[in-house]
Image 1 (cartoon, rainbow, N blue to C red):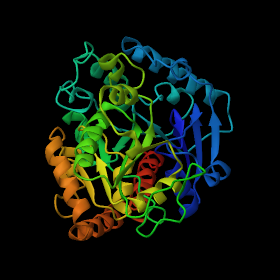
Image 2 (cartoon, rainbow, N blue to C red):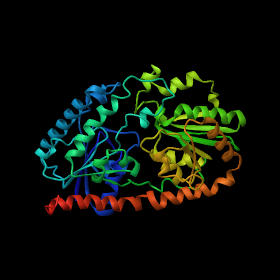
Image 3 (cartoon, helix red, strand yellow):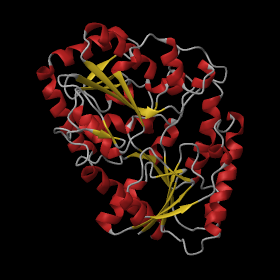
Image 4 (cartoon, one colour):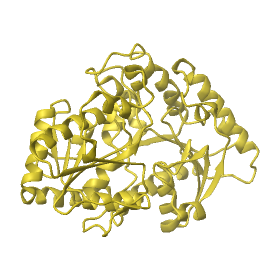
Length: 419
């Protein structure tokens, strides 16, 4: 089987999947991408084993401002044309199946003019007009485009979904974010966590992060927070409030914060007038920054070591796509304190494999965090059950075979004339 993956970036959701399909089943996996990503960073094995074709960066990737929302559909059509032209220029690239990311519309509309193969769309998410995702933070200043943006960004997603042969989402909640009439076409298939990398156990000593030794005094409690971007949808500002409450009660806590300053979702720039939500939050609060280490983005290997040094992981998301960091922390056997929102409840059963508190209740979040730090032995069972959850439901060994079967089934239906 030869699968062609389409995505803005590599590896994103498809790099590890392609590597596993090649390792386990001998499939050929090719990629058309615009850029190599640092979230996560591609491994040497991915770069050496997988066939990557890089396209010129689109204008929105070259710009720090991104696409103006009213122009999203036009930019989507231009990207579709770029992908079709790339296929026309590569006559030797003839896959059996195309799998395309549909986060802003999979760029597949013109592919059938050049390829007679089935197309699968990865249906990451369907934005809501209210009460979810970037509209959830009503505690922040209002933004004028709030009802307009979801309709703009969902339009190309629906165009891609209507044109494809099948779709899949990572979780049931993500699948159910789509309009009900589309859900029968979308399967829930998680892409898998590397439980050999993210595993319980002591961290190396010394702890090296980003090539530098991270000095943590003996007896220090460590609380971790990880987000691709330190932004409002992932509750960075609420995390800083919770951290402040914790520090009022005990001085032996160090907060390790992983993530970049980029804003990936929503209108934080409109809320704040600042290109960095992190800087806006830090400038507005009275924070003892000697108790915080901001690492920026780091390699997966460093993140795994850092999580093994942690005593508690905070995950304070609005209702949105669940981050890999939640699964990684659970795989490490950490007690995780997360926001009590629907996508997280699909994974965490409160008091069994994690702890949940209301997102905006800083007092309850801080009180629960302080309880874990004061009596870690009481929460060891929750960490062990978190690890078992990832092993049983979200590990690569569990997740890759069903995805392989799904891809093979869609491709096979086309070959037999059933699709």
